[in-house]
Length: 167
Image 1 (cartoon, rainbow, N blue to C red):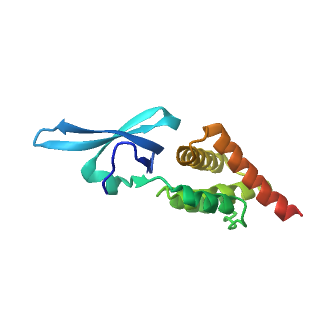
Image 2: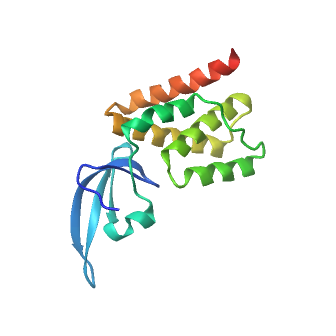
Image 3: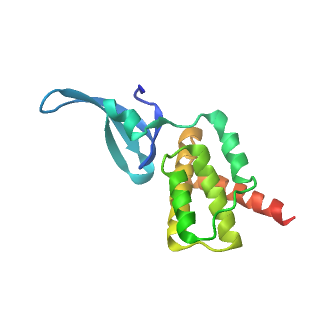
């Protein structure tokens, strides 16, 4: 996949960011092109070899058109997570690892509901916080809103889904 300076992308391990440059680096045997990605939520700059973008899993950030789908997922009906913590954590990690935004939204919703029905272990809470942070960062990036506003938007939609269940 090819990207240009200014493109909004998501690195599967570091989260959403923007391509701020493309640099040629001289290596031992040849020159290689690197994409420079600024990851604001982590205050991090990542260099990804152009030839490894697909292998690493860098993807375009979601489109603004997907925003309503993400919000619908957040206040929608959850998928019940396993009660066994090891099984639940393995499932959640397998869903989070690829970094696909719709699946991250589903994990946030499902862990939120699990937290309200049962409880979250420390590792569950870590996954929940990581997923919420990544989701908020991507929402903020594509909507040109502040991170805190994106977090509030997520909270509002999660609460809306929970309130609908209660009524």
